[in-house]
Amino acid sequence: MNNLYAKGDGILLIHNSYQQAGGEDRVFDLEVRLLQANGHRVYQYQDHNRRVPGMGRMELVLGTIWNNSSYRDVTALIQRERIGLVHVHNTFPLISPSVYYAARKAGVAVVQTLHNYRLLCPDAKLMRQGKVCEDCLGRSIPWPGVVRGCYQGSRCATAVTAAMTSTHRLLGTWSKCIDQYVALTEFARSKFIEGGLPAAKIAVKPNFIDPDPGCGRPGDYALFVGRLSPEKGLATLIEAWDRLANPIPLRVIGDGPLSPQILAAAARNPRIQWMGALPASEVRRQMQSARFLVCPSIWYESFGMIIVEAFSTGLPVIASNLGAMAELVEHERTGLLFTPGDPADLARIVQFALDRPQLLDYMRMRARREYEQHYTASTNYHLLMSIYEDADRHNSARVRPNALNDLALERNVCKPPINRPAQS
Image 1: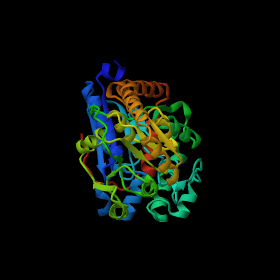
Image 2: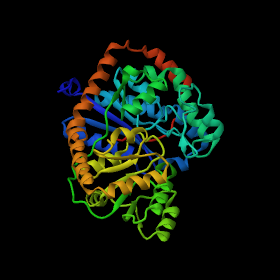
Image 3: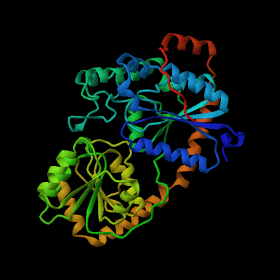
Image 4: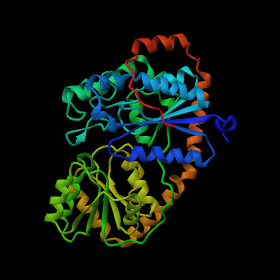
């Protein structure tokens, strides 16, 4: 067992939850339960974006760069609960990178999971106007994104995000205050290295599925599951189904800003059924009975949790040959790949799959085996412990910062506190 467990030190997980719960929130909960199930003392420090609408603009701006309340809360929690390691999932926009400095002041190792591309791109997607965009990659100040208002279609909102990443790049936060990063794929790791993060500190650990849902039996429909937003490639999906001569029925599960377009497509094409947002248990049931899952995203995807969930049910995946998806899906083994954003090629690949039922059966078996070998809770726990041990070694090798320097940084950068109780 690793040193953290042997010493009885607690592990603190930190996460800023989103207004609409998504993959990052789910992974945070899964890792909390994984650590608890393996006997660790686990503490949680969280905030939630539902507070954002009630906040003043200046309070939000300053708190995004440095939240003194978070700094004090985490400092006190580390001391009170004998925390041995801090694992951060998301600090944007409420918690802020001040929590790294709280851990550093206490001499505690810090791990940061890179769930999205926020440190490289103000909009966190490396995508603009429906295409991959790397114009801000590697820049100390991501000014192209600010000029274009990439985040929420607002130059002001984008400037806040850019100010946070640029300020902490200047302070050396990303290189000095984090002992180990967790990238979700080798593809993502390569992008973060290209963007300036230290290669020696970036490990690869995929997400996982727990509990094991088990396999089902293939049915007579295809499936899309995800947020109904432009980057998910829904326009490509709908046009591909319009092009198919005798399309297999398509069930669309999810909600989001493109819901009206999906509703209109379902009204026009009787082979398309929009099922709205469904509970996780029902999504798994739908996967167990589907013929294949379609993942037509037009951005890199930071991981593709839905792909691994499909594998856990033995469901092959037809995915864009792009980014993380091209790494997770092995062509003609666990699924099929098509040209991103090309509805004609997607239609061709779907027909190719439908014409080859034996290949679909083979890919179904391989998809399930892929889950069993790489994406179970047990496998993930061993990877996570290895990363924690590396972080602890990096932290131990680093000269502990002078407390007076930390206090000086706090006085110079800290802003009026945002009152929020710590959760544990």
